[in-house]
Image 1 (cartoon, one colour):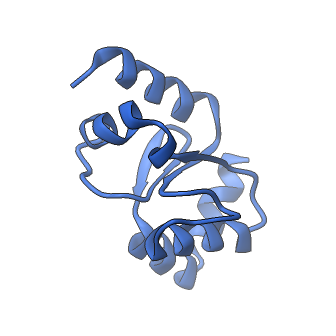
Image 2 (cartoon, helix red, strand yellow):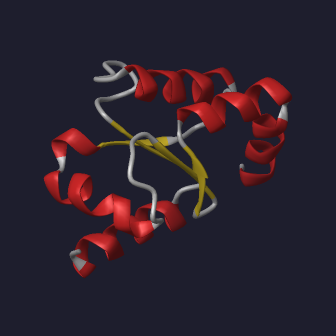
Length: 105
């Protein structure tokens, strides 16, 4: 665990309303789960920061320690981990994600 990298993660998730840590980019996702998370956020018409964990080995190795969540993607809203693609999609289907994102904007 690298404290410098954890501090960088904290800075990203606290200075941006919505952050998606994913494999690839929203335009070119590198896994199906990351694609789902990006598409759900796009469907909510919300601005979000996407971080490609494949392009940053330090983030890739240390993100799992930040919020004790071992897999990608990870969606953060107002500094709090919401979850991965299944949780985000379920919240979207129930209308909960849209409400959460409105308060974050």
